[in-house]
Image (cartoon, rainbow, N blue to C red; front, side):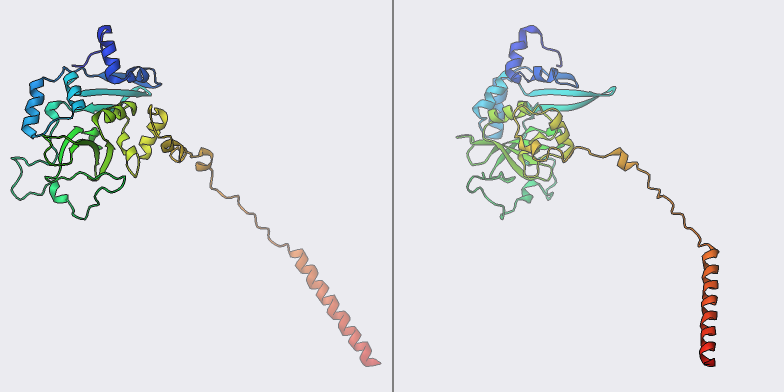
Length: 291
């Protein structure tokens, strides 16, 4: 149910959104901030989910669902006379916390699945690099956020017997099906989600190839609350349009070169000078022969 919160639940919203609603409402160009208020999840719904998937929810995520069954906040910007949706912060409710790569009754018998993408030569976690999730039975993966089609943020159980000792992490699966580590806990991821204001493709800031140039424009305009400044300052001007209209629309017509025809007078004088010289030479030759 979409509605503006009343004064009685304003403190509750401030706690849930860490006060980011007030920051967005006072930001230039932001047209509207919409928060979808959700009822708390029933405790039996959480227990049913755990029994169905044979795993125990992390304590912080379970407490989150007992406070609100999912999360959705969107905000738009106004350009000229049109309103364009920009920011989106979503966490699926308990009923939409679906397993990724699980077998389906509608799947054809020999149809390839995500588990077929597994490669035994994949690098395992070593040193500071955590072990990547697997699409096969070695990991249990559940979708937390569809990321508006730019990838998926997933809750990952990486080891066996998740119903006994749940060891979970939050990972980002990009559209090329590569994994990128985000946080160890759901609480840490929730803070990232809020502080990045739900900007488009913000999860790609935690990948090796970073966000797209278009997303950098929005990052530069609405800087997240906590952001690695090197993301913007390293090449802060590289994505800014620097086209000089004076150079782009400069006339390419060359100044015409006027070719002057040589006058006939110098040629005539040169010819007469040549004849005079030849006559003088012949007269000198005649005088010498007479002597």
